[in-house]
Each structure stands twice: as C-alpha cells, then as structure tokens.
Image (cartoon, rainbow, N blue to C red):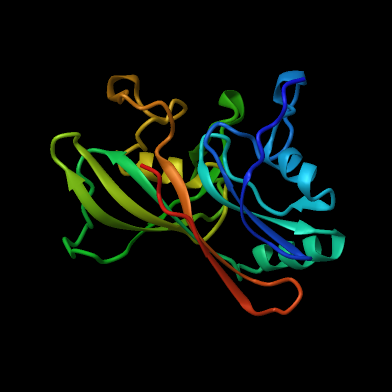
Length: 219
C-alpha cells in the first residue's frame, strides 16, 4: 500500500482539528477498495481520535473541521445543526455574473429548494414540491473578460448536498470544472472544480469561544 501523504493541518488542539482538504480527496471512505483513501484516514494517522463533523464534496478543496473524541464531535455537530457555524467559499463560474440589482459589492441570495435527483445520483436538483429549503448568499468579486469567468464569494446558509453547485447552475453560471453539473459545451481547461472553502468560524467545543480559520483560495 502506498504511503499516504499527510494532510495540511491548519490547527490542532485537544478537541479540534482544522485541515485543508485538497481537491479530489474524499472526506470519509467510500464504497470499494479504491475509495478508502480519504481526509479522515490521513488525519487519523496523526490523531487517532479524530472524528469527522462535516464534509466537503470530493471535488471541493478547503477548510474542514474534525473533532477529537466523541464529546467534542457531539458539541461541534450540534453547532452545525443549530447554524452556529459560518462558512464561506470562493468559486469561478462561467460567464459574467452580476447582482440582479446591479449593486456592486452587495450580497444577493439564491433561495431554491433542493432534493436528491434519485434517478441521476449523486446529482441534486431544484424541486419546488419536495425539495428542502436551501439558501445561498453570493457576491460577485471580479469578472475576467478574457477567460469569461466571474470570481464569486459564497455563503451557504443551509448545507444541502451540492447546494452551491446546483444553486449557481440555476442562475445559468455553473462552476468552472464541474464535470457533474457543467454543460459539456462550457467545458473549461480546468483540471479541478474551481470551488474552495476559504473561511470557517465556529464555537470551540471546549471553551465555546468563536474560533476563526482562513485558507487562501489557490486559484
């Protein structure tokens, strides 16, 4: 078995670990012998008591928090469930994405219910009849007229599967490099999904004090 490369640990103490997950790596083991390598396994080589609290898509890179021990996991899971955790992402999307009211620097919202698209798993889709409430805040940062892509900042208020990817697709601006949702005629010269978790703020499981972590966008 090849030696696993150690993950980039941004922070670690007796209760909390924050790692920077690379794109293309699962957060937890998948089905099959070829999908056992994952962030949690790599972190556990250094911290055997590390437990997963939330996940990033395999194609997404960026900040991922883990708990050390069952009690810290319970505390952090509760913080996620009660929306005490603030997450922010950066992405590159196809085309020029503008705020609907043309307010530079302002935040806009995508409020569309999502549900798993069972016949086409693992895809999700907008479904007004059966979908769960899903809310994303977004802010256009810059448009590159040469590459014809817009850099956007994203804040998921809810945490549905593939929420950011489907919500941006609903605006007609899929994320660059998205092989699951991006139309084939928009295939960009990208080796990865251009989505990175840049900011994570949460109550520390021991002290309850707010801990803030940042990871610069690599693209």
